[in-house]
Image (cartoon, rainbow, N blue to C red; front, side):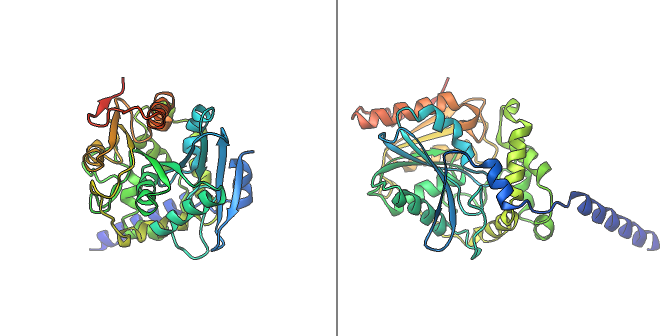
Length: 337
């Protein structure tokens, strides 16, 4: 018994030393903002006092596309699409509450409703009456929920490895048997980890999360990891992540069926997605009648970053076909070569 007691004390001491080693304070918001804003950055203060970071780029006379990033990410995820599509389209990207340079809310609200309000605030501020909305992962969920709530404003929908209704899956990355499934999502489900996570340096979790999100590992650079780390160390963001994760199960679960999402929809999916399995892409395609699914071999959770050129071209072709009244093949999934 004495041996077990001392062993327990040693393990506890080692755990405490590890926590001290991994401790990292917040980074001041102004420092992070200066580092990751751009000449295109704009800030909108909403009615509830939230300062929303967004960019309005590309062809100001072109059809507007509003792009929404996924969990733990930021509008930087769509920088390549902004560059590749900006010659023809007006590209608006934004940081959701608890992310990027929008950051923490004063009220602690990170609900689905607030996410839709943020998209609505930016689109109304810019005078967008009709536009395309698209998003990746959690941002895809924001996009199709926005299309459900404001169907008259959305002409077309783009879902990139999108989260689905909560009753489809209980969490992002529910493939517990997959060794490359995101460690961070599993840890955030644990009470003991949430108790210390607000003070931990996110470097190793960011690195592992990106390794599980990208199939093409060569795309993961130190500057990419640093951006994720810095934005998550921005004052208030780690606590925002914990609040959002803790309250996720209480979020409403809208149901999708062929009668309530009628916009032409482009569904893009990485075949090697270890965050949200390709089976969900097929499920979206089966539920959304007017949809087209394109699958990318040897690509993971982030096609707009792993294969930006080919995925952007598919977006361009899809929107041009819709705009010109040309019927796209909306029946059979196809594999991008």
